[in-house]
Image (cartoon, rainbow, N blue to C red; front, top):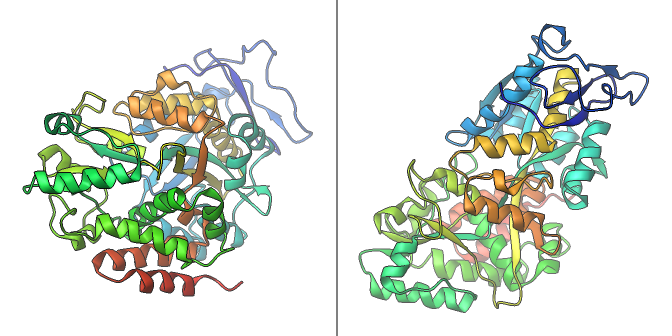
Length: 457
């Protein structure tokens, strides 16, 4: 049986105070003589393993947008918790998660835990009155291992509801080191360099395209397009304007946003530049995001802007390294003096008040789970902002690089804008209008339609 590192996970307010120790499912041996009481209603489950555990035979249901192939490592990462507590974790992945979670709230069919990738959707779920605030233990873990910004992303009206889970760096461009080397291309370090390289590739190789992309993602189709706009706006207008746009202090169709969308259009809507391996630019709308970068392996495409998690979508056996089949470079800013980073992640929201649910939520917020997940992700493509994550446990060099970026206090990091917006916009019109845009709708109509959809209250 796998071992769990020494630390305590205290589940407060009538839930388990679990000692995760190096004893393989034995009683607590962390030097403290067992779990410490944190309140009159706290039960000491220092003998929580095996048949003595009051959690034995319980189950916790998880609902998430994380599906095959990324779900396998998630399930594997729960094994330590399941083996030691006797709690069974029931995992359900759904490509239409963002649409179906609110509907399940209406029908009274909520899971125990949902991994919510949008703070805006978290707000929506809290507004139903069915979400349960995070326990005191989870709050302490978030403060210790994630910090103020991540607490804010998982909070509603300054109350923490959901601890961060996974994280990702979105400001990457995937490419083939071999193709670049064979053509004598250098990785661009400014936006002008990137556009010059795009033009050169188009002129040099008529049998391929500089770029490939896919916006398809079930009812979430369009989200990769929102990432494009956010990444470029962060570079052209800066983090302050980006923040104002996200919280609607400036309108969605502000001239600075229009300028950024124009730069995106100069790549994605030019038939000379996209959509390598699939067809004209309109095919981006129907190409599944998992498939978007695959033409790189067939020499049909040179570059694909997608997050660090895309590493898990390459076929088995693909070498992801600087000298491998594929690698990724930082999406350059307007100049080399600024390096903003766009990122995202999921948050663990709970909907059932039970010891096993809160205990598992506490486990997920801990370094124990972060490191177990890293080890379980054999092919790479996952990272966390948890400061207790040991970078050496990450298999992929791209994940290691991403973790270092996320843990760097000097990084100019901004969370995915659409995920921060009201869900009707961020997980609604922003997605659909970007899909219409890549099919041929003009920039002004696209931005105006999204602005008009912004909730008035």
